[in-house]
Length: 98
Image (cartoon, rainbow, N blue to C red):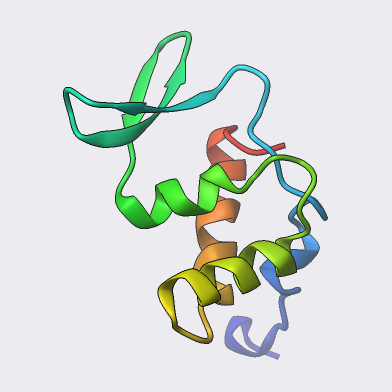
């Protein structure tokens, strides 16, 4: 068996059921930059509009499926679940998501 054939679990299995921002991070809109930013003690991350819409819904109350469903309705698209999961997975890697 090669590495290419090893199956990996879907990203959603490693994400919390109801993702939320980690305690040290705060999401806010910065009018000077006309963008949403993620603030933390050591600095700031400027978010693109898609990332901001995803992270704004990470309140610890909404399941991942509900977040995806809401975003698909908002943007009138289908099939964005993998992209949402990828952003949240990266957010977990960076410590943004609990």
